[in-house]
Length: 341
Ligand SMILES: [Mn+2]
Image (cartoon, rainbow, N blue to C red; front, side):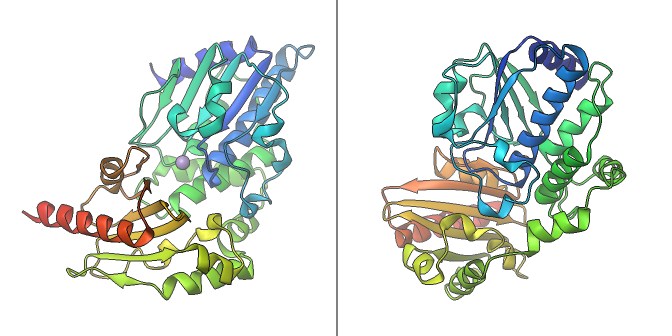
């Protein structure tokens, strides 16, 4: 189905739904959260413009709480903890920036929905229980995808400063401020329209990328102290252990930006960051700038893996962080060697 028809379809579903669930990837990021909040405003505005007597009950929730770094998003309190969902069943559910298999605890609630709409741009997304899929692997972010609502004749909505702030945040988050390859002229044209609303783009950028608590800087210091390069020099990695988190006074979701500090080290192809969730659960993030598709690699390494060609992640269970490092680095070296042939 074409984007135009999908948006018309979504309009009819949303128009007739009284209880709508909005969720996204288990651990919210700048794009998924921006998209959730933007969609909330879009759906409310649209209904107010037509049948104001029946404003839908909309709930935004995710498997994990909103990380502190996104506390500056306008009306971020609209996102409620999973345990506080006021209803057991919904008419329509939206899954943003992830397949329906990556929403954790929210899945049983999503299953109650008659209509399940998946809006995603992940290349490695798996088909799930959605009844309608709007997937654009070439688009930089779900926030960019959502801009299409404002171009469609069925949707009578205004681009408010709040919505522009969410979409701008999501777009710069997923493009590293228009630097990554999926940035297109359309991305920049959309960004220009967002700026026209007067949203405080400079402040959004500062808050999203630059402002960090001291504990995050301490954690960066700890992680960089563990930096290693593989024998071939092509793989560079570091780790975050529970001990390091304790010393830094940080939590595991404060790893943001650490891998980008060394992801583009000259001569390397792939960067990894190993995170000790518990003694036998290790999360690994990947960044690539060579030919290797780390999205596919992550998928191959674990059933909980996936992402994009240049940024991806996976979870390894039943191994210690040292074992995970050995296992992954060896596999990466092998992939890179195979790729050279
Ligand atoms: Mn995204």
